[in-house]
Length: 506
Image (cartoon, rainbow, N blue to C red; front, side, top):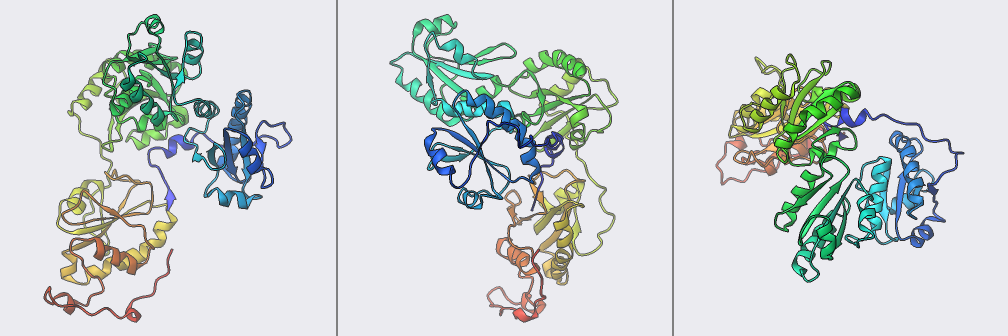
């Protein structure tokens, strides 16, 4: 299945590839082989390793950023290494490398985990510095100020030494989030007083907006995480390859302000700050470079050639709210639009092809405006293929999928219980999360809110078996019409395998 993130592809792909540095240039990235890998990793407390292939475009794009990070981290005694998987197949097989580049963090040979940060120099440095420190660093009056400068965001807990319950809750939270944030703590009342807080308190320090925020809620992990995500997000930030994932996983809607020049984006950011402050925690507002990432506007049902533009995306509901591009982007008017969206007074925009006047062929064509009727609001087992017109695997599946549909269409009783359908997920907004093409899901009658995704081989027989085993009606597409009409207690004989058409897997 081809990987495809509908709302991220145009954004992240626009970052572009960068040529690898000249191999003769002195490098702070250590190249390892099967003869040196184990010993090097064993000799260092913390190592970041890249497993790559010389021909890989993403590896070439990463190379200068990885090199920059290696140079900065060298001074902190955190080595960055690389392994050429085309030359060192045994190492890469042992490390279960299945794609390039793969980055892994080593704390010796027996403690390995995937690198979870962004593939940018500053993100790599930040992530590895977090890995090098304890989950919670004990701070003193002398070390506090330096700790605040270690990253763009640091979190410090101020607790009395005998407040074991608060310290334990804070430490547990820090352990769960150590990949994402730097945590420190102090038990000295004089330090808390100098920072203008009482014990117990948790303060998030940042290098933007109001510079710090103080938490005053209960020390519960979920509540703390929501607060940290909210407090660490700029009032009006900027969407780009490094920030996109954070915005999309924040759990609240994201408002985009598309603008073509840095001057425009700066002005919009300033104008929208009061609105962002008003709705902080309910919606994130960010500018986005329309020249670099303008194609992403099309994913939000905007005209990707008309800027400036504004739209709201709600990932949790898979909903989009484009602002009328004929109108001026003013903070006052757009502010009203934001309020109306948050109040549920604006219907989401739904991109849809026209509903077909008639269905041609045995596969039912679904569009966004017919999705509820044909897929959800009926008592049929509906097998739905989400496809893209340009997808080679989808094209190869098409004749087999048509043959599958014909099996059910040939029997009136079956047709009343099973629908074989497809939808162009590039031309229609769909409520389901689609990460690749083709994606095939069965929506069983009576359980439409719990579709079952198909992951087997793409043969007619296997697809029919999937419908039988997972559908409410348990329809056997290979049962002869006469057998299908027998009483429920009758046991139908198995179909002769030799009578089934032969099909090759994709």
